[in-house]
Amino acid sequence: MKKKTIAMLLAAVMSVSAVLTGCGQSSGGAGASGETAEQNAPAAQGDSNDTVLDIGERTKITALLKGTESTEQFQVFDHLLSNFCQENGLEYEIELVNDMQDYFTKLQMYINSNTLPDIYGCPNGTLSRACLDIDAMVDVGAELKRNGYYDKMNGAIIDFLTDADDGNLYLFPQGLYCEYFMYRTDLFEQAGVTDAPTTWAEFEEACQKIAATGEIPVIVGGSDAWQLMRYLSFSPWRVTGDDFITNYQAGTDSFSDNDSAKYAVELLNRLGTEGYFEPGFASVDFTSACNLFFGGTGAIFYTGSGQIGLAEEMYDEGKLGFFPVPDTEGMDNMSTNVPIHAGFAEGFNKATYDATMQAFFDYMCENFSEACYTKAQIFSPFNEDLPEGLPQLYYDTQPMFATAETAWTSWDDKLDSDVLTKIVDEQQKLAQGIVTPNDFISTCDSLISK
Image (cartoon, rainbow, N blue to C red):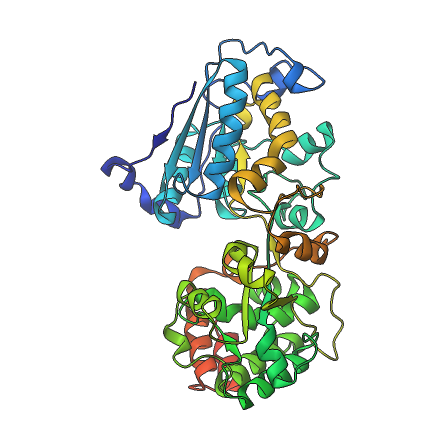
């Protein structure tokens, strides 16, 4: 049995949207049930498929997820919950909210009233901290160690979701998402570029040769803030991990004082002003950029596992290659060179985490990889053998990140919203040559207090 609900935010819900600006601070104690996982009987040991659950008075598992019925998170959890509940005589209800701001409003409402569902989508940051403040998060890391799946999880995914304050893991990944560059093999050959670049100096040399043939070296969705910001953050990430952006936000580091950050500023300026990006790149969004590149325009495009479906045919025909984020020459780069993140992660409500929910957690871990590949077409966060029948790009790109230990650090997750907005404005000007690298550095360093 199953029951799905597509959430429509009512006026009463929207009236509390301002709570988001309060950084999700709230207070509270135990959940409505008055019970925690410790107060409930533990799940039976062994294979959950062979265990008859004593579900007590529970009749339903509830979930709140961001997206629609076509999004990856829903496809995975709908599949898992449907099978588990059918086997155990339960119903389940998935509440969906598509718009990001509306979702945050809805989640905050549940936090404020301490009525979170059994499972809820939650980004690692302010909202997860608010859930911790009301003791509404199961220690997922401890549960993964209990059932033997912690050591199977990709190290970079663990790094991405580890709580910065106490070092615990409270969120379960939506999947494993990786990013890398794709390139047109024919345009590289035409320009005399024999090898994929491994440093930014080689990257720029390849761009120069490609431009000389009359082709566009790089396609970028410049109107989407994250696309240009990737070029601004690649070098600091490879050299410092999350240290630069964390320390910049704290006022203990700056663009002018950090060589890797300064390098990135100059790199973005050169790529834009030398004409290596497509004409009008500042007004091209990511979807349009995808259409340009996979439609046959441009030699290089920063993309990733989310676009394997678009790249599959060209890759199988030998028209596309791929390479990770280049090294910053002359600096000490970390070994991880593929940005990895966990998508929109999930929390489990500690107040309702009874024996049935623990059994579902074990069932989820046992079947998560299968659901990722067959239902959502995304990489599993577990380092398990890939199933047969996937596009070849899955098998060929996986070795780049299988042993990665350091996660991607997304600046838009770290920066205050007002600082982020101003840096986005300045990076547009920097890439178009409206401001110089020194102007950019001076302006951005003035945004933080030392």
